[in-house]
Length: 356
Image 1 (tube, helix red, strand yellow):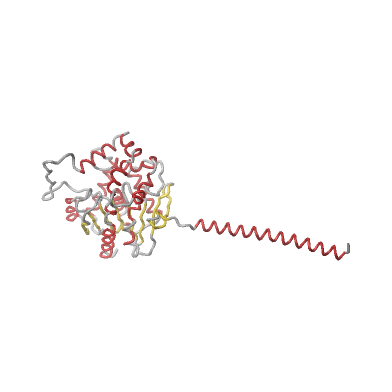
Image 2: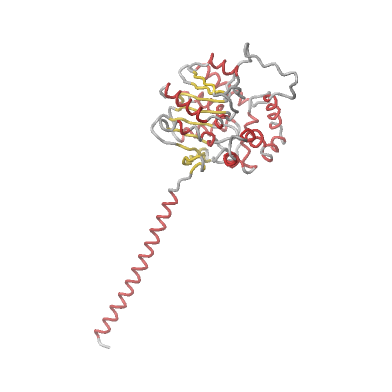
């Protein structure tokens, strides 16, 4: 073989090796680029709170557990919505659209509820208050308008009384505001002569007494899911679709996740067995509500409210300063599902009128 042939063969071999190596490196680089792209795509995937609650899910760590919330963003003043028992931020889904154009709206899930973590804690009111305080601090929320309901009212009022310089207004509905015994002309209605059985309030008191009974309450809530299925969702039949009712079932699909639903009723201030910490918490914030003069308040009530009845409305009208009151007509305790447009519009009008 001639030298020139050997040289040509070597050049050809080297070329093949170089091309092969280059091809391998190029393929590897392409693979890495695709993987990186896939990682970026995965990391930027938006998790919605639910398909019919189309706001991005956010999480913040408080006391070692994740608390879930939705946040509309925006540059307006901050509204924080706090749900009660046994709901979650989903309750506010049809009210948020009335407020998000002018305000930053945040709707959170209390610890143990909704998409928030369910740590192994007692879920007593003081612990909820600590998690709520931590939530506000972690997000550095300032100059807040609270929108609160049910147990969210107890925790929200307590937060306001504890942090008076950080809350500039409160809108509340079916909320736990203590009022004196009924006075004329707002006396109790005379019972019908043919009335059978106890009143709705008396029935609820009997149910709470059962839930507070050790062993009995555990079976009712943890095993039978009584509070959600019988006390809450039964009232939504004809108002909500099955899919919407499932949204309330999803966080409590397993009995072990229902501990928060068991403890809230046991903390309810409705009988002599109420824990002292609930009594003290309510006494503190009720004094705050009566004495605070520069705090715009909005009461949204029903014709026949369960928590906020006729006498309570009139007492608040006479005794709480800077209060605006709207009768929202008929509905149930979970009035956000019956009249979300009316509630959202009323809050928006009140905020505009008070330049909040």
